Structures are given as structure tokens and as C-alpha cells.
Picture (cartoon, rainbow, N blue to C red):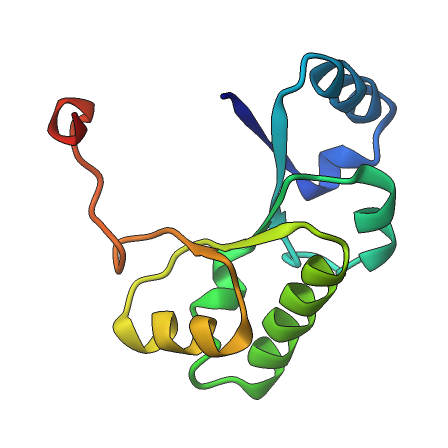
Length: 124
């Protein structure tokens, strides 16, 4: 199974839309990356029907001490859930952030707090 990651700002371009249509026709999954890094547009979630939304790591890093960042992540996770889109938190670096994400209903996490990168041979 193949999943492409498309940056949020590329999704709305003509080229991005054509690309998404082609990979959907090939039954590939795609994730919208860096979501929320700019002005969050929930309207785009309806139109792109992504498999995953990857929440921008710069927001994730701040959720334990910035109530605005926490509210933003919680809103993204809730809207994703309502649209049947899985949410992924980028840059999860501490157990506190991971616990907070669980409370918020984020589906997946990636970052050094989960696992450090390693050679593919180590994951046989």
C-alpha cells in the first residue's frame, strides 16, 4: 500500500488537484502534510477527502503549554474525525505531548518521542 504526503498549500493548486485525482484512481492513499501551519481551512478537508491529515509539528510542540495551540489541534482532530479522516501528529518529542494527543483524540503520532529513525533492516 502506498501513501503520498502532499503539503497543505499544494493541495489547492491545479497541479495538486490533478495529482490527487490520478493517485486516487490508482487506489493510493494520501496525507495532507503540515496541516494548520498556515491559516487552517477546514473547507479544504471536504474537497480533498484525504486518507490522513498530518498536523504541523510547530503546533504540536506547543500543545502542553500554549492553550491556543492545544485548541487548534483539538479542533483539527475533531473535524478530521467527523469527516472520517485519520489525524497524525508530527514532531511528537515527549511523553507529555503524547499523553495530551491521546486526550485530544489524535489517531497517530510520529517523532522522536515515539521512536528514533533507524535502518529499515532493523524493522524486519
